Image (cartoon, rainbow, N blue to C red; front, side, top):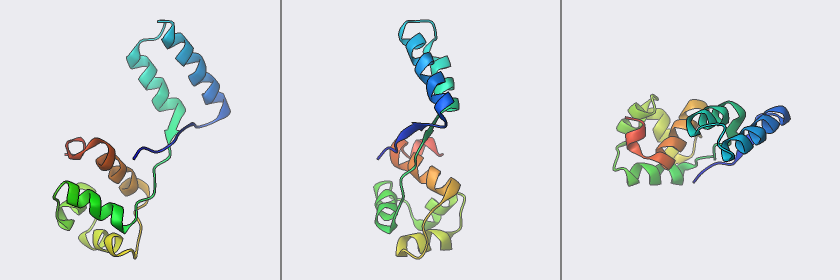
Length: 108
């Protein structure tokens, strides 16, 4: 479940395209290309509803309190997400996306 990648602006899109060509030709190494991508591109983080959050928690066999601790949020917030009263946003949504895409080891 990866989000869409897009340029932060049309100027940064042009910079990224030029850097990609230079990387392909061997003038920019992989590490520098990753740095440029981090500066030029943004990832649209998908929405997480109650079912997706529960599925992630079940996949890693985490209790609500442990998930709350990993995401640096409260237990009541995780409970409200799972019953659909609230939805994660900001840093919590990005951390959920990391957990979903890269695994538990990334956040611990």
